[in-house]
Image 1 (cartoon, rainbow, N blue to C red):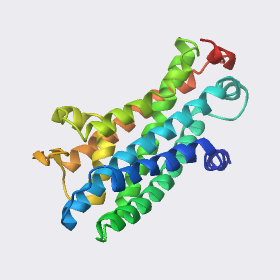
Image 2: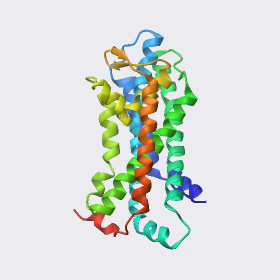
Image 3: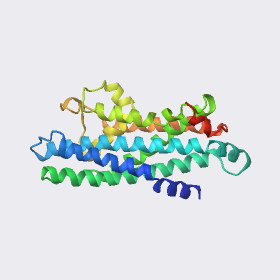
Image 4: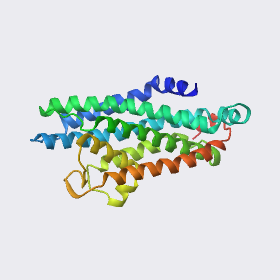
Length: 266
């Protein structure tokens, strides 16, 4: 019941679709038709498409985190009383909203996958379909889980221990980190340990691997450096999700009622 409500809420959320699909489609268009597209072979074109798809996919996932942040922020008081006086349990709330977010992000990812294939195939005159489309949708599903847990932890931690005056900034932290890690892939490569250890980098690299069908080098822009191990990305992301799930359960079960008016104060 609560999952159905969350799904309806997310799928009818206009800002989520405007920014998660509309704005990210703009970036896909820029990558295909505006920025320097000088690929000559199908393999080069597929690699280029995969890079942009993975970058935009990570950014779209970050947009969902901002949406979830405000959802948790507005419901903090009702959650505190519901957990105490109704049958609603923290685990039910966390699992339901986590599943709804994962499904919403997977849907957005599917749309971006289709748009990426269409735009870049048209631009390159090659058929640039993803090599592992179902696995790529699975990565988006995991990205949705991770982004929900990250957003919930940040908002509830601030709500419980610092007040809500900084909520406007906190809500955008996952999205900011998504931009940083996404576009850093086009510049100077980050240390390999950071690429493996960051869940944001894990999502971006896994999206690229599932579209391209091959392991990717450390330096995407130059195509240099060692080939990175996909299994490590998967294990790292799953470990982060498990850790954040435990933290989220602890924090949400102790959520305190706060006036949302605090979030409007500078």
